[in-house]
Length: 113
Image (cartoon, rainbow, N blue to C red; front, side, top):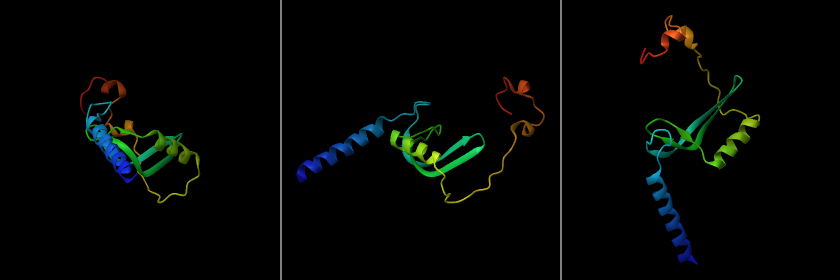
């Protein structure tokens, strides 16, 4: 029985290594790593930030994906009235007032500001 458990652990570990070696970002083809991230959500001006969420993270473009189980838990947490671990003050800027008089039409086709 112990040998069977060791075989299962070894097989699972090899499967994880194989999966990680083949993981490529669906957006850019970059390398995917397991990482804890901050999940952010905005619903009509109500903001929710949850830190230390397990995710697969692209080291090239920053794309984050979550497992189905983590996604289900994030949805459940978003529906609850959570007691925050901390509160942060975040400055908010208006895009249009920060681009030095450029209008949206002026920016079409520009490659850099």
